Length: 242
Image (cartoon, rainbow, N blue to C red; front, side, top):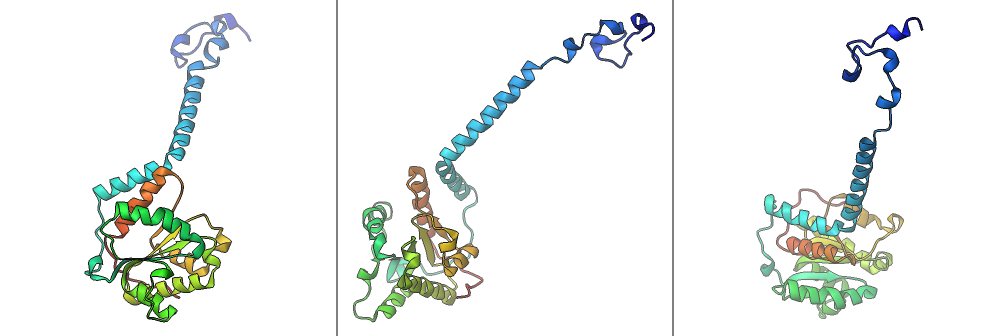
């Protein structure tokens, strides 16, 4: 390069290089590793990862708090049934498979007695059905005469023909009354391929369902959601094709 020692940087160069001799430029002074930038990006990435892990670990607690926040800010202004739970013969009808009786006796019953003591008229499975009726008639009477019907879904129940008959009867009653009186409670994860058509159809219509889990915060969300669902029956504007 001719006259390199006389060539100077233009006025458009970096502030530190303006009008300086070109040969005085040392790339190492300006093109080195930016330790501050790399450290900042590394710390930011670590912080995002840590926050993601903490959010996942505390996901049920966060869901519960968001649920309470939504309830406090917006409430639930929906068209509801005029009849209150006290006007039904039974306030709650719990349907379940025999293999899930342990959950009912060990967890559900004590929790309802402690958290919702006002529920005094509850049907727990076939043992509490009207003994003066045929079985199918007694099932329908329990559904029809209850403010809410909760069906406990498990891998055992979805494979049982009688339990699926109960589910079909409950959905037919839902269509007849146009009231959201049915709640599905999943006691465990069920593979999509094992979910019966009626269950998948129920879920596709955004009907209320709940998931039981062993996480303490998740259980608080579960009971709070159940209490909210027990307050009223929402009026529906569509039906489920059963």
